[in-house]
Length: 344
Image (cartoon, rainbow, N blue to C red; front, side):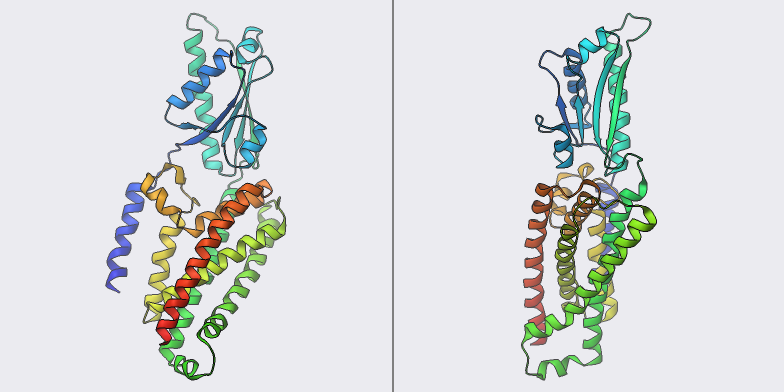
């Protein structure tokens, strides 16, 4: 218990003071313009020199770059280039913006508008009237910038964690406190059968909760369901198996229900902060970002936003699902090992 009491505040303080920030950095920027387009080149250089943007792989369909998550913003020059359009008096540049994270999208839009103004002032310093460059912002996947589209998938993740981790850990510890585990140990069944019987109801309950949450999100908040349902439920099943295994692991190291609850919150609190639900992961130090790769909430939240808003890009889906499957196998194997030791 003393570990929970003293380690938990240190973790929370470290995350809030060192890693959490609302500033938007490391924005993946792709560009599409002709090699001789001077103004477009200056815009790109100024963006990358600002410290807000990092280069993303350019080339190909700009919409696919945004859909796959390889770029968050794409600068697309008009036919003939930005420089030529300025000379003709109809300067224009298009910006494709990924708005699945509307907090970052709003900041990116402001950054680009400010950089465009700076470049024009530098290029035409002696003109009393600056040439007009229309920045055509195309907001993708959340054109109305609705906050619900950004927050509701995160709330889904939290609700599932509450059911699978806390309920699983507390129910198993409760049986140990009541002494009913001795009956299970003496029964002629295998350890894996006991573990399967204890955890399966929570998997089924969580899947039912997923359906209710999805219906409520669509009907109440108007969340779109752009991707196929099988991708949504496969991702949810993988995440539920992982978190149920985590709840089982917590139950094996807890002696009372209070310890099980404290242990669950010790896992959930940093897990939520390091999932990208409220604060952009890209702003965090590299060490913290590296730790977040072990967080199953990060992958499930990425999958939810991609499936619900973008239609479930195959590269994003299978990449994140594969990593989550590896985490699930490790968590299940370790929870079974600890559960068997507890029974012995």
